[in-house]
Figure (cartoon, rainbow, N blue to C red):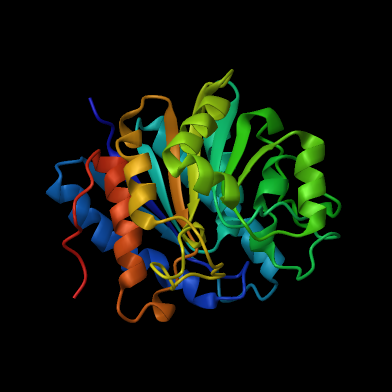
Length: 295
């Protein structure tokens, strides 16, 4: 029996260079609802979390929002639902997966599908942008605990990255030292996205109670999905990624799914939104069809 999907919005772009990512949940939520209703998947529209106008400090705002998101995700799982978090920039992952880890009994695995590693800490970051740090927070890597973003809820041996093609040396050194499996884009091209996703799921499910999937839309080639916070050339085909993820939402050990970094204001023709909906429809409905969405 398929679990009810609970959509949760992380409506902020404070962590990256593209503030328009904050608009993504408002645009994507009704489209996802329409697609899931078409394929008969039970769903619930959960909260859409956004920053307080009174909080001007980005780091503290993100810390508070991640705390609220973690609580919302935990509550959804405790209700027996499958959370689907719609970002927002990728800093929301600190809240999503902390919330999942609180709700399950045992270790959590994570498949991180992204053009970037997102494994900086404040001292190694070249930009100071928080959307480049959430994987490091989740792995317990921190050199500036001031804002309380580091949670250390995931063990390196249970994490696999797919589609990486833009990173700094410090991130690679960190993940290599920790023993995290990174599938770079060259390997994806050689083996195919389906094969590397299968391997990543094995890593994320070996010795864990549950696993999650975090999808940064910039993993998709900008020829297909240009409306993202930080596009990187030569990525994965959106259609191929959708086929690889088809039906994953029906797995009982999938704890949550997350899709981030869509920016509606950079997507006037809604090409990127179509890719996002196609991916989520395939993952959550178990069949890949042409989305009806978007006038």
